[in-house]
Image (tube, rainbow, N blue to C red; front, side):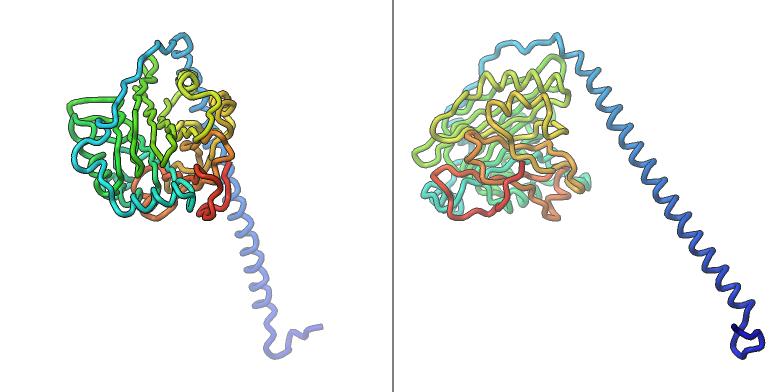
Length: 351
């Protein structure tokens, strides 16, 4: 038992220390309670926002229930129309070497999809050169682009021509869906391989934002691979009608070279009823989180390959520049087109 008169012992001081420790413990509990309460409130707010958006989109989509997509003939571009101006159909050393490696089966075909947000980054700066730098780093052979804005009424001028020139791609195709006095806006396709016939399909529905599909034959050695570049609508009923039209265009059971569909499908959920019919035709897509670019949560950008076993893997490209250049991250995948590849840069297959 301690003696009050013992040197160095101060009961009142010990009592103060004990009280101070209890106060700290009580304060810590309160702080943790506040943190938990704040997290609960934030999660509740997010859940309410998601529910409100889903409910609003569902009601808004009802406007498209009775609207049917009329039959439309595609606009057909011949090979000469995909080689416009000096920046297309130029054979760079990199493109030539990459083509040779893919054709000989030394490496898989690299394909990518990238919503470039009119070349406007999260810093609100419009910079096609920055987008081109991200695309170059992908080392992709075929690239699907969405939200491509050109500065004049010529769809292959402005942003697209600059991007094509900077990346040194062999050919470029523009698929504009909107035109105004300020320029054109829509999809685009870049390729290291020659492009054969191109069909531009209009899949716009009613008064919703105009949408289109680039349907292109890409010549890989002695094979012709069919590529579909898509950017689907924001609303479920709109996407449902657009996928119904896509199913009329896409071959049912491709024999020989693979059929590839890639782009921004604007679908929040990996197993959505809206895309189920497309999956029944082409198999499960490669789904990786690509939006928003700073903190990717949603799998808006997807890649389908039929037959599905030709899809080796997919990933989002997450460089510091890619996180700021657009509101989406580019998604890149590997596809085997000439037997099994000896070199796979993407070890896992993301589903």
